[in-house]
Image (cartoon, rainbow, N blue to C red; front, side, top):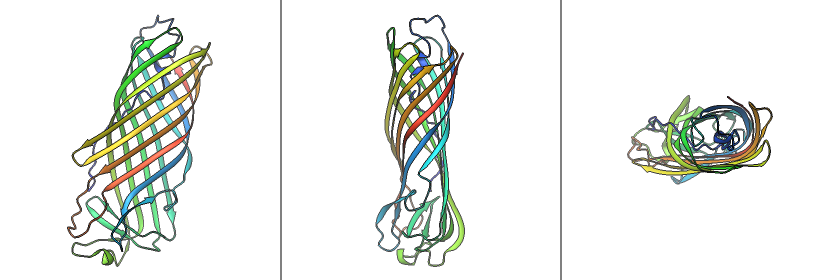
Length: 297
């Protein structure tokens, strides 16, 4: 039911206002510069998905961390690259990863879920292993429209792509056309079900930096977008603020705090005409600190 909706998703230069400013604005001798940054972020995640109560038929949100026991806090890698082709223009790419899985011995909240055009039933007491893998990639362009001796302000446009894999493995019943809610999946079998989606979310953003002491900069960015197209709708918010320190001319270190939130809703059409099961809706957010080192050349 969920077909891969190819998307590349970018974002605003978020993480790095320093991109365009990794060197003093006053010394704009270099027309081009490349910045490579690697680091990690400590993620406190909150994720949920719309599902349906198999007995009452009403929709509710199942929480991946509370109900399905996925790890809430993790230290995860990220990568960023920026190319400044003069003092005002930047192109950038970044990537971060959040892969998790967990096993529940006995489900306490039974639910039905619509994956890949098939309705599945997970009953009370079932043993289930859950997988939620999310990769976030961004590519875009930034323009520095305001500059001074110790500050910079820019606007970014880009694509923000989330590659999402949702999976369940264990005692799962498949709903057959003609069955009612309370009879669906009455004989569960050991099986694995999964859905892979690439969610398309273009974005616009604002970024800036301010050198408050020689070699030290405050950097920040904020980006937002909402899209509604055919059967897909979704929105994202990405906000980051931190400090970057110049260790040497080429090596810099930075510490920042990041908030990221995305809500994706894909209207699905179940083959079972008599079953009314919730659309595929995934809510995901994380908040936490980020540490990185960058090389400028």
